Each structure stands twice: as structure tokens, then as C-alpha cells.
Length: 255
Length: 257
Image 1: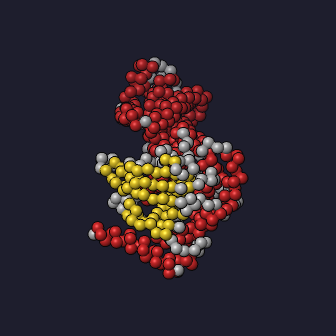
Image 2: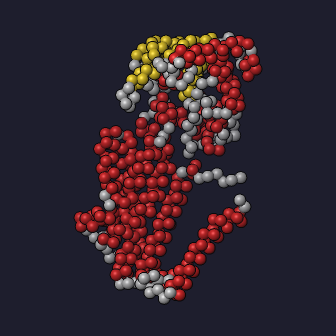
């Protein structure tokens, strides 16, 4: 579904220095595949998401979604960030409908699907509440509903659970998997957490910094539906050891 | 904290302090035979104010009118100016130094020149009030518009929403709390600006009353006018706060359960 061919991104900082955020990267993501991107800060994970979304143009290479070259923001995409960034003056339901409004569609026709999504994420009964009345985990669920409402075929998630506490985080991961089982779409998911990356993914893309690049793509050999118990599975441990080795050997090389 | 203790802390103690200060003031002016024109007693100020009550209505109205006119101008000019500054780097470069320059010139020094150019009447006082009040409106609005989380801007862009739609649905409402913070400062500054304008040349308004009464050694009248001015500033500040609560209901704190 997504094809990156030698995609590069170089930024110029305010001081005029060039930063090689992403070195020539080639990656193919299949339709309905769940791919996680893991790596230390500065490895170009978030840049890669923005490039796929068409929010920033690449300095080299080509990005194609369904054989269409990405030149401008690609509207068939849902975005979830580390912070929920809800609109504090809108109720939960109106926050979910925000994506529809920004797309120029009629929000009245999407009230029912919005309510269904809220029910799917366990937020039924919270429609008329305001974001500040919700916990961090619930706010992030609203942000996920907002991204899912236009039913995009591609969901880009930039450390969506990074600001949550460990327990909520695990709960949200499993919930995301449940939603994904029910409404299949392609997901690109950026995270700092190695267990999270493995638990969720069909394939884990391990990245390393300076310049940001892919160091290895690992196919996760674990059955679905996934549960937390899988973390005790020897295959899970083998995968996380592999990822950890890739990330930390990269660090040792430099020191 | 219990309701009774909160009442004590928030209301009774400040009220008692105020009453105590007034009693000491009254007592001191009587005990030391301080002349009325140097420091009038609270009772003399109230008495004089009461005698002037009908004439004060007209003067208060004039100053209020000038203040509100200047305040309205500061919003009508300040908010669009801030929008231009935030949206256009070119205009930011062109306008920002001018705005800072306008702010750094002492308004009291411009007032006589302005009155010379604009003449008598309420309009030049409104202009002085506007000049004193508009700076916080511009700065706070610009800060508010720039404070939109970049993720929300990315989100709007990914849905291909027009910049105008993003402004209307995201950036402007996000900036509202900042705009109100600027407006609250502006409304109290506008009162000062109107009085400064009246000091320079006028025949009505509370500033005029203060200036003329002191030249006749009627200090207690000046004090009554000052009290009216303070009350006006407090009421106007309260009014802006009430409007803020109506326009931005999501900002008011949750009632504790």
C-alpha cells in the first residue's frame, strides 16, 4: 500500500546547519499491515510519518500510496499524536466530529458513526463531557475516535501512548489491537517502547539515528489475537533481545 | 476548608482590614487637626460625594463613554493587527518595531499633541485611551495565536482544510483566553488613558473634576472622583471577566464535588 523508494529528508536549522533527518530509505507496507517504528530519539521516526502523510516534502526519493505519488497532504489518513490535542471548547462528540468538519463533510450525517466509535472505545455516555473532565487515557481514546471517524485506510500514530502511565498504556495497546481487528486498516505506529512495538506489530522497523535510517525490519512471529501473556513467550523475548541489540550496539559503536 | 472559614478568609478579613483603615484615617485627621485640603477625612469625602451625586452622573458618564470608546478601538485595531503579525512574516518585520515604538513613547507626553491635532471633545480622549490600552491586546492576541499546538495545525493540514477554516475553528478559539487576558489589562488601562486625556484639556469627566477641584483646594471632591474612577475600573474589569466566562465556559474551574 505504501512504497518508499530512497526517501530522504534534510532539514536546514535556523542557524543554517543541515540536519540529515532521514537517509535514503526504502520500505514497503502492505494493505492492512500493522507496522511499528522503534528507535532512539532523532532516528527519523516522526519525520517518516510526516513524509508519508505528505505534510513535509522529501528532499529525495519517492513516496507512493496505492501507486499515487504523494505530493501534498494525503486526505485518506488519520493522525494520532503523543498528546491528544483535543479542542477544549468542544464536547467529546464534537471533538470526534472535528475531522469530518475539517474535511468539509456534513457533521450531522456522522453523529451516529461517531457515537458508535465512542461506544467501541468504551466512551459511551461521555458524549457531552468536555476534555478536561476526562483522564489522559480517555482523552487519547477521543483522539483515536477523531482519527478513525472518516474511516481512513491509513492510520499514522506518533507515540500515541507515550504520555500515559504504564498500566493505561498496556490497556490502550490491547484496545487498539481490538479496534484494528474490527476495522482493519494499515497502521504505522511510532514508539519508544520495545515491548509495545513487538506486541502490536506484524513487522517492527528498527531505526537508528544520525542520520536517521532503517537498521533492520523484523517480522514478528507471534499469533494473533495478541495478549499481554505473550510477553513471557520465548519468541517475544527473542524479538525484544534482537531489537535491543540493534539499538544498543549502534550506541556502542559511537562511544 | 469549610464554608464558614472560607467566608472568613475571603470576605470578612479583607472587609475588616478596610474598615479598620478607614477608622484609623478618620480618627487621625480629627485627632491631629489635619486641614481638609491636605488630607480630608473619609466622612468629609463621602459627604462631598453625596452632595455632588447628581453632577457626578454626567461626569461619570463622559469618562465611561471615553473609556469604552478607547477600549473598543483597542480591540478593533489590536486583534486584527495581531492576526496580521502572526500570519505574515513580512508584516511582522514591518509592524512590530512600530508597535513597540508606539508603546515606548510616554502617552502622557503625546496627549497634548493629540488634543492639539484632534481638538476638543470626547474623541481625542478615546484616542489617548486607545493608545494606552492597545499594546497588551496586540501582544496577548499574537501570543495566543502562536500558541496553537503544531499537531493541530498538522492535523488541519492533513485534512486539507483551508487556512481560513483553520483560523476560525482552531487558532482563534485557542487564542480567546489570551485575548481576554489582554482585554482585562486593556480595560483598566483605558480608564487611565481617558483620565489622562481629560487632564490635558476638558470641561467634563471625572479627570476634569479631579483637576479643577484640586485647583480650588477642594481635595475631598478630588477624592470622591478618584473613588468613582476606581469603582468604574473594578466594575469594567468585572464585566470583561463575566463576558469571558460566557464566551469561554470551558475555562471556568469545575465546581468541587
